[in-house]
Length: 567
Image: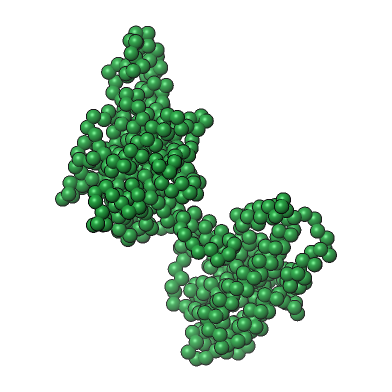
């Protein structure tokens, strides 16, 4: 994200001021460029672009003078103490440095950010004077400004006015990043305000500042509103929050916003309208963009006069908490045999057993697999989930007890775990036992595979009270026909599965829009199924797969339907 993130303040003495700004630079500037020039415009003195995240980054505080640091600043306008000009974090994987200084050091960028700072704390405010607002033009850059107040018992009105601004030249990129930026900036502001409120309440409890102000106003000179009364010095944000490491924290957060903001929006080749998988991928990427980092701040001087700020690595030996994902606690590498593919799995358990098992999977019944090895369980579920589209079906790879079907569609248990009687007698469940050769499976259960197969000598036992109908869903029949063709390699098989799943998901989406468009008779529904080339036996699959549509995609489909209806 080619942008500048800055913290601004309305000083009672100096007016709007930039007090902290963060930019990104490539470590190796282009040698053909003159100082202050850039191939991508004034925002890139050293091609200030953002790459991917790095687990091996480091942070340090720069020593020495800075072009953006002034010596005539009051404490309220100062973020970097004399002798140091800011902080630097390095993303070693992509060779990008994130630099935080008092203000941008390049004159062109400083002018843009300074103008945005003045506008954000004067004329460009939202109702209530707190919240986000967008302004700018193609010549002076575009700005997302989030203004907020911070409690101060010694300030006029008992509060100080700040803003966090994001300035860039790309208008569309900034607007598309609005939800991401506003949510993360709001998180930073909440933390600052909470710390300042705590200090404010403590000071108010010690002595009433309001009474002192009223007393001073009785003897205020004519130019009282032009300067601060008394001998009290303006306090910095560090004093207001009581957090001496606040600007190190802001450097980390601003750097992460630049890094994550650049990686969350990427250019992709559109090969058609958005599908379900695209929405799921986007939701997954959004969920992964959480900023969880533990910091320490040892002040270690380097040869260049820098102060190094390091990240503390999480203790790998720390026991996971109960709230963590149960799968993170399981070690799947226990030496058990594994299934390589869906074809291999079908060859091991047999085509008849696979036929019954596939029916339960594609119609949404619970499949319980018991095995001596966790690695075997994981490989079973990995290959079976290829029969379903993304976001359909939940999995518990291993559990010490039976879990209800509403919690998972795929459940892994050990061989000695009992299955309740109501499950064994129900038609909505199917159990598959993988018997190791140490337990000497009977001839009836022993699998028929070649001697070099890892499951040679193992046994397979399947239990279910359900009777699979003579006509199974068309999707299942076509998959089994494809698996019968042993001349197809795994690449062709995978491509076929992706294509046929997309074909039937399109039918599911059409049926979903049809049912949401209003009441329809059974005859009308049957006509639609005939148009979709779906038979009666396909209805259980269509109903189950319809549950897998994400809320975002359902909203997209309904919006599209209403748009077509209005035209």
